[in-house]
Length: 151
Image 1 (cartoon, helix red, strand yellow):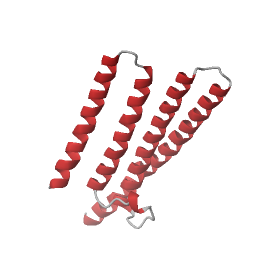
Image 2: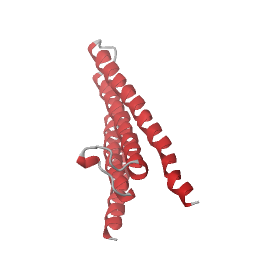
Image 3: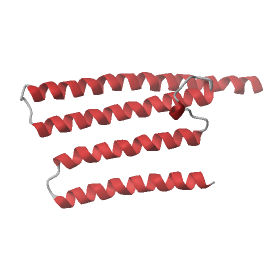
Image 4: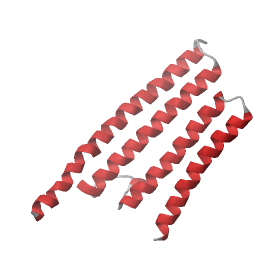
């Protein structure tokens, strides 16, 4: 029974590899979207504002791809093989490390989404509401990290 439990950790390799593959797919889509926005801008088939929104949306896709990549590497490193050669900033030794890295990327995604919304909004009160909502989420995540690290 003990051997079965020890070997069962390798099951995590499936979602880890799936996450990494999904990350590669999203990276290709993000780069494609950026290229399309740039080409459309030079062809003058869309406005600069629409091009900026398209590029920000593509950056959002790339950040999501980064989240999937970090999840994939983190799960693989935690459960399957801790000797994988990764940059020092990406080494994950515990679920808390993985959680902290993911929260950092989520905060970056929130910032990019806010910028994309900011480009479209015209009413200052709408900007305030969206900014306050984004700020509240970032504050909550920061408080979560602070409380988790105090233990």
